[in-house]
Length: 115
Image 1 (cartoon, one colour):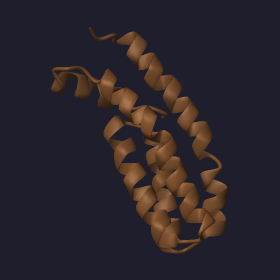
Image 2: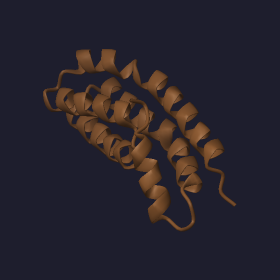
Image 3: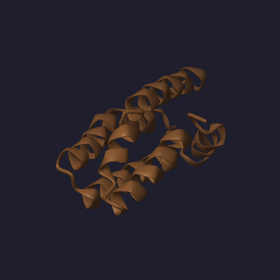
Image 4: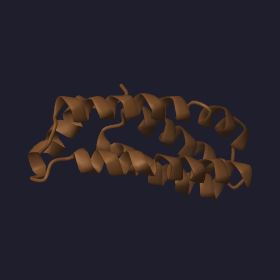
């Protein structure tokens, strides 16, 4: 599932100012998260891949981005095991998943406009 329907609904109840600003912030950070993942693989550093994956996983988890959470979990394990060849193949899935998630988040903003 690209986006957990219950996570953002829960955040909407918790946050008085709404969550659309949080969605915008999350979307704006995607290039940074992806760049950190790519850099770790480019410099062949499993520890850095683990750290970058863990950081991205936390952000994705807080927004209900379930598919990316699972990918980040895989990348964490591969980073710990310094298996950068497999990580290189998995990271190729990330841009497509980010694109799908952005579309789902943008739709969420349309479905729940905030004033």
